[in-house]
Length: 330
Image (cartoon, rainbow, N blue to C red):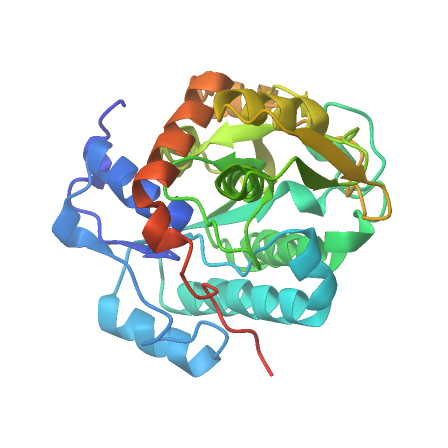
């Protein structure tokens, strides 16, 4: 990665830096020129970012110059359906508290990571940033998507009213080594990998898949996503949303068939059409990211999947037994 000298002495705080994307972002910032000793990764056990006073205490303690907000409560379709209010409230409070506290503590730059889930359920493909408000998000994850969109709106408002320097990056589905493989919170790629491996272990004649396989997704390899965030932090200065994706579309059916082949499973796929499909299509137009800070996703999808599988097989005994990665508000 290009080395940015302006990172050399900056104090950078990465909220959510201990998570899947966060760990890769910490390394990407170091690769980009930041000093490891100047990077702070707050932990939720010490600072509950849903609590305004806790966020102020954190900033008073660390005095960061750049804050990257990767902190989020995320999960698959099933988890979003079970806890819609928690997905809305927890994510909204984390983002709004961070922006307001960073503004009051004179943070030089705030980097907010949004989500493709904020886009309308039905919108022209590929998604362009101007279409973000042209409809309601897909119902199964709308509370999460709307909360993340509201955080972006607050950032834009803080820029207009106070001149607070912040950027808003809309990230597509990320995957790769270190992904969340827990049954209750995992997204589609780790969930499928885990399901196939269990079927192999049990000599099961088939695996069950949700929906009919027709929806499509745009998946970005985790190291590419982290590099994009570093590039945007260094080079982008506009609060209006900007897409981060791989710019390639694959159906869930093709994804599952690819993983079956890579994992050498010879059973059948049983599609349960009583289960929701989720959003019909997802593909982000990345023209603005290319033009604004020169980001191109570079990891071929098959290569990224192989690296993800290799990591899972190596760490399987540990990740299979992990507890859910967060606790919802009560």
